[in-house]
Image (cartoon, rainbow, N blue to C red; front, side, top):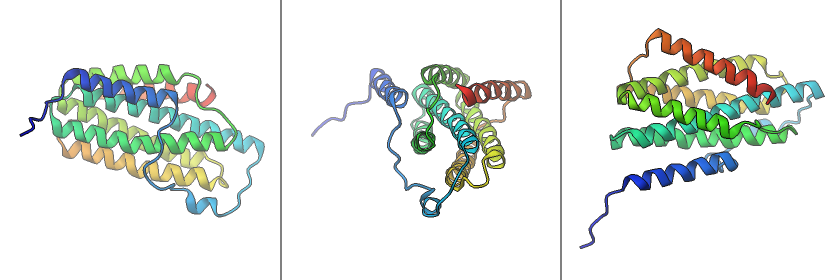
Length: 216
């Protein structure tokens, strides 16, 4: 009878490295259907200023997904709970769809993604690792708070995107639904509410990221 080998720590690190390489080097292929397929069937016209503004907002969203991938990979690597590792991995898979959709939309609008992708990934990975070291409940609480803030941020983008950019809107709306689901999953699995100073610090960091990524 074949004896199943237990995964070694090095296996987890290798998988994490491969995931990081895939994210930093490009965008993973989306596993789900394009949420903007119906919107693409209707011709749309954007002025040059509208196009650049929409692309900048979607670039910000792409950076957010880079950070989400990094945080969830770090949290999945650090937890000793196989069930929670699955929670983080599942969220990362859905976030990889967001990564593909946002990158594709930025390029479709004739612009580039952020020049600082490796920096965003490394910083978010470190933050996710620190959150994980504080324990699974805190790590899940960090996930829930992150997703709450991202959902709020995406709502603001729905207000700021050009009215005629139905494609970007459809993508952002699907992302918003997914983020709400991730936050709920984190709480159902025992995520604790973070203290106010931690939540405020996360907001400040997010503001720095979104402002920088809009231009770079």
